[in-house]
Image 1 (cartoon, rainbow, N blue to C red):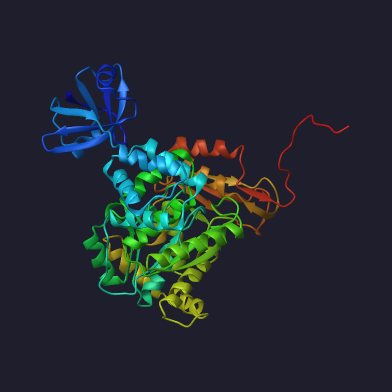
Image 2: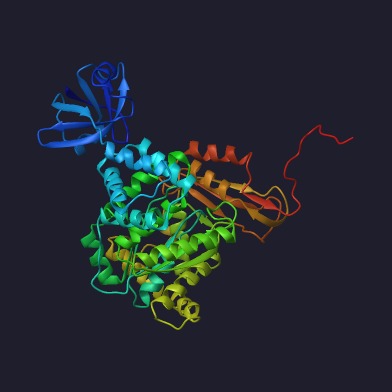
Length: 506
């Protein structure tokens, strides 16, 4: 059928369009079904949202922010018809039936995700089936290769190419801002690309973006790495593993993170970047994705095996994730803390973890004998070479290379939280920290976040300032304070966890 374009003042990131119910019934289009919009030789697919009044009969509504992408004129006539790609549906059904998918089938399925020929319902069924039934080793390899090879494949002229990646799950993980310049200072190539925050208060890209651009073309990124030996970039604009973004979007809604998808998501991007030696950081502890040695060993084994099948040498470091890394949580606060650590003004868990990860990479890159990597990494950090290399990378990326920690702006609305008890800190609750940080506005509000003045094992006295809150709006700060009236970040030795007035044991 032919319909006229009508732009709607609606904010929507999904590929959806709006049809009048009567038009949809006429063409037998169901809610959420994929449809093809065609104009001359150009066509694309979107999911249909049915409405009685938002769009009149004879029109198709498109969110206004999509106007540049689709390049239609208002009232322009387009052809609209159902998108029936039964082959992709059959592939999904085969997986639901517990059968093994072939390389060709998985490649077609990934292509369907990228082209928009597979909607979120089919992706959801694929993810749910993977979560429940699991996936064969070969299927994961096929999926990883397909996700990488359908996007940009970057190759560098020199090597070896080193890389490090954390699977996440622990707040305050800004170690890459130290690890990358330490390794690059030793003469190794380490092009670090990261995603923005998915479930955490700040991803590496969010933190670096406080002081530097992070989005580069493949050509510009290669130039930065050739000049400095490293980079701290966002993977989004590079078109690495383009299907991954759409898969993650559905995972967020389902609140699931199947292990085979974690493996494919991480290694597809590293494979696309030409990584030869990859270190995987698996944080383990309360509130993280991995909470037992058994699960950590299993995931580590799967990473190394899959990496080997892709021609990468993968090693895994299981790290402590029972509390935040360092004391700062939130983009600007974490950027400050990382700079202070590079300047030698702050030590502790952030510095020690960064040195530990860098040590393994230095040993893998044969810059030092096995067992002596820590000493070399510490020397590079304490000598100021890592700070010098960090500033060199930031300058090459067009950032504020000379910025000082106290020059990084924080949210103007601030509040302190006092300790209600005296004693030793026995627990720091990662989940509560993440929730508070998001209420404060992270990761989108760069100046929002928390500064923890105490960690596990520290002695705290009643009325000590244990947490500092930062927000860019008064309303968000008040919301965070209200949340903390009923939720605790810290647990101290001997504290009363809960009182139930009137309860008596007779």
